[in-house]
Image 1 (spheres, rainbow, N blue to C red):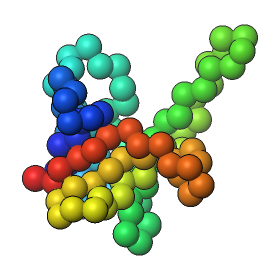
Image 2 (image 1 turned 60 degrees about the vertical axis):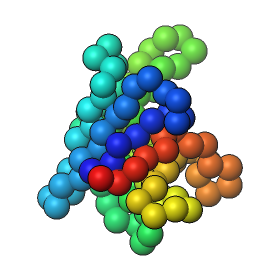
Image 3 (image 1 turned 30 degrees about the horizontal axis):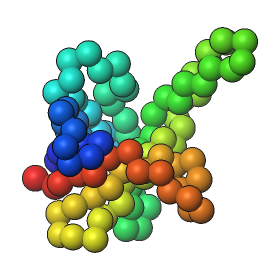
Image 4 (image 1 turned 90 degrees about the vertical axis):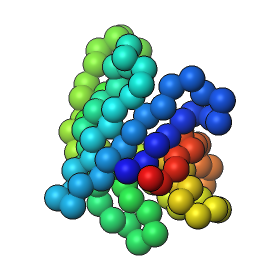
Length: 104
């Protein structure tokens, strides 16, 4: 189980629970959150990849849902029990962190 915040002073906290069957459930203390709440994960060496539905809206406001997309990378941080969640887009060359997490 990971308890995650956008930054240390963030008001809301998200929880990611990893199950042995490869599923991940996400919940938030922000009751107005409209984010995806379930993913699958795959082990990628020292990291985990969260897989789910990617939503893309084009310039004409046409929305497309792309299933089974690699959305986030969960990587071990520089301290014990600390993890970071990054967007997969440009992760290898210019990672953008979404959350800082503590393993509980």
